[in-house]
Image 1: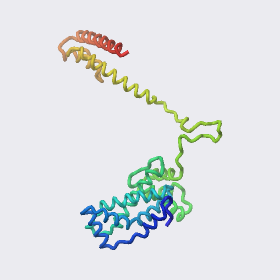
Image 2: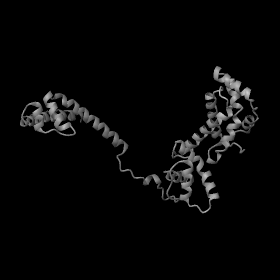
Image 3: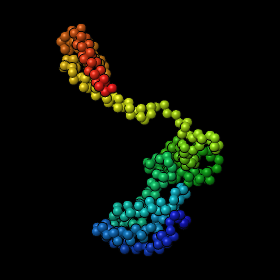
Image 4: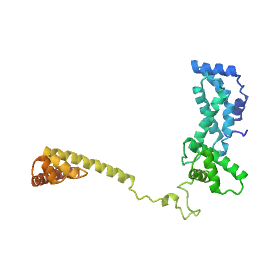
Length: 285
């Protein structure tokens, strides 16, 4: 087993020297923790399985993450397994805990291996952790296969599309690239990649200002509409504020007046609104 970088040798020795539990003793400890919340029993149960955590964490060391962090996340998975373990089932705790430990470490790797978050579905996880092994096996046993043929074989084995395989392979083979990295090694050229990311959209302060202006105009209009009587309000809403404006004739039929009278009422209402809105804007300025 590889040494755990960043972890004291004393910790590893203690974990590796913890006594194995017999099936009956393991069962009694699990029952004591499950039914009575006995933390001493939990500690003994967890301590006896830390070698399992270290062993599983070692299988993920090639992702370039600190071994100490992998073991810590595996320990979290071990405690989660202890919290969920049902001692009434005929299964050893180590068998049950292995899944939780591996899942906790895999989640940590997915969160921290790259600044670009990968897929989190079960198939995407399987692809992430199996791609290198499957590709190496296919390349070794099937000489002469092209990349597209290898992608096809892996896609069928994992149950994803060839496009997903190609994208994951690209992510695994290329390091993250900082947008603040310089484009040139010369000191005279201090340009960064970020400088060439053009955004044609409005600046954040412009977005906020536009939102505030819209809210302010909406408030002015809402207050101005209060000066209209019921008939004026209906005509203005139907003619000026509706998505599909009604005709003068159709409104005249609804209100029982001529379309010319509708036009006159609309003009009078709009004059009222202009006056009130002008007063509101003048007060704001």
